[in-house]
Length: 93
Image (tube, rainbow, N blue to C red):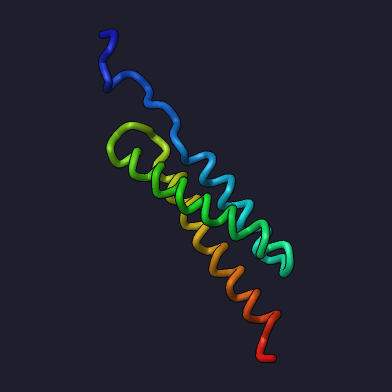
């Protein structure tokens, strides 16, 4: 029984960090000036971690693919919010 891959729990992957940075990016995305400097790098990091974590989960190496995918999607949403807030605050000059 020892060494059976079906009974051993798979390690956590990048889902936790992706989800954390995705939430962080989304929170800061609604702050007009700070969002450009905090949310954009956090959103990019969340997207990258989410894609890597989801890929590893699809290969069966980790068990947190849903959290990784959620973090990546939150990062993408945060990036779009920053873009819309930037366009709304800069407006036509």
